Image (cartoon, rainbow, N blue to C red; front, side):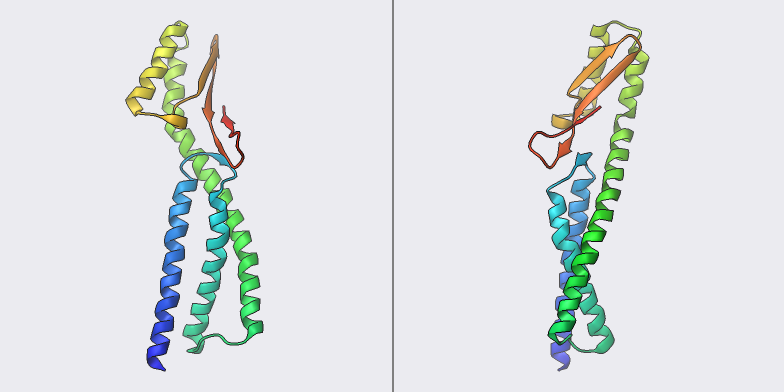
Length: 172
């Protein structure tokens, strides 16, 4: 009986560790770039309820010193885990979106200041300033601005965003 309890405890701990590692990796992926929706959230919709379910089973196992038995108890835990998992996934998505936008603003604030200082020059100089910034930071793909529009003392930078649909999104 003692060996079986240690085995159960090991499996609960392993499952929880796997869920935590997956959740951290997906969260890191989500906060890399601003997005509208993400296929990665589907991973969260699987990981978070599983984590809650396994955590509850581990807590029950440690507290009661036995594996949870009974179909009704297990079903209740699964339903509760799914509901709490969806709510928690939504909260994680909101926080990840805020962090992604903050990272984006912090990374490109120097570019905005750089261009703001060069607006009194002609258009070729401004374009060269933008090219210099891109080459100095080794920006590629969606990290580099898609377009620069300017007139007088105003300018607009356009970046490719990331979204769950095919056509993507733009960040201005």
